[in-house]
Image (cartoon, rainbow, N blue to C red; front, side):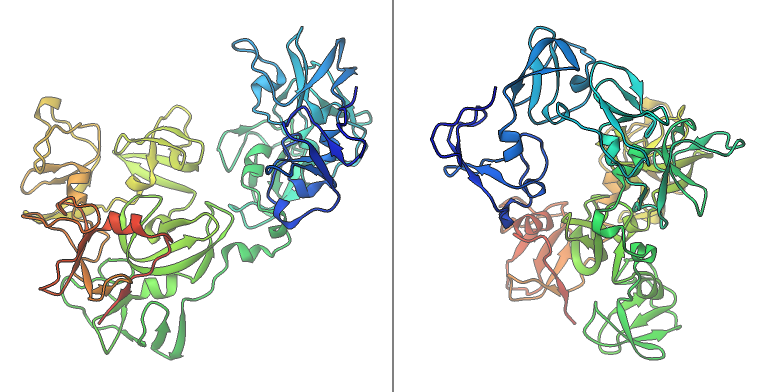
Length: 554
């Protein structure tokens, strides 16, 4: 049974999935490039022609619009299958193919048996796939199997090779023989099993779980790098990136121009900078990383310093392992890092595709690292699917955390705790407070000496052994250790130079939200007769474009 047409003209169609008549469109329009077909969930541009609704933005591939409404299928011979716009939820804890995986799009459904599968799987034919040299034949039905290509379970439609006795997921037929991932500089090749008899155990270099040597995985022929198929696909570069040289993944382009030996023009400052080995004044820090400096570049015309590490160690553009896009180095007087969630001054990296901002401390963190906490070494790896608490601060996070590779260990850290300064200052203590991981005192004796509230001894804290001061992380870090306070700069919506300030007593009201500017980092006008002051978070929130630029003034 096929959909019925409401008019004599073949170009018009009344489809059961939409209220309005649809009109056939022969040519793909530019605006459909990123629109997904509700029938097969494929992008519209991948198939032409298609049906379009003149009354709304509904689009449907012609091949999906003309699917039969009812079919008899060899994968389910008991009853006819009816076409539906979406998968219907089955009984609780159902283990059928569609209930165990999240599918969208049209399905064929048997109401008697609660059996269904994707409409696109109903008319599969023998195919040729890049992943295998022989023809692959489709099999439909409720058959359980382990896919030879990826090593994971399957229970529905699949493809087989009669010559090799392989069985492969439908989705795995689109796997590439070679892929390039963001975390590794070389191409990875797909293999169906390990030929090395002495291979022993192999660990996935992405999730660090064991790889089943009898099934498919991706590996690097140049080095000892292996990955589960699904882990590698999650990290795979886009099609247009695969042909780029490996060196492009870590493109190094300097952020400065050498004028002559010992003198440079850096993008962050309008004057030339001169290399110096002289000692700097006490308390002088680098404008780029807000750290103390030894060897540095300075401006002879104004009070501007950059450490040699920032000048030569921070390229203007770089590809970071956390995403597949080019990140550009910027220099702001104040910005908010999306990863560690600290306010920062100086250099950071911005991904325009993700609208993501990363401070240079987070940029320095590799996807695998070793941390020694309480005398025990933890091998940490980045897990974007991690759901759980951070060992340092007890915050509950969804992804973007680093967890221990030891399956018996629940240790995990978020970005914020990874970049915590090992020492920090507090205005009422003349000594540096040390980041401390454990307190053996009784719970009843644990409190914060700054806010005077209870402190959990299992969570990290700052401690001064000379004064016996204990403090919450946040109570100490309210002093904004990564921000260049009192340095004048210019913003685009105020005529006078401003500075970053923290006001403890008798704070004025924020010009944006009307709340007192107490404890929070604020932007205040330097002119004594001007009352302009605004929370940093309010200024950040008020920007329509987050890529606002704050320039230093002399």
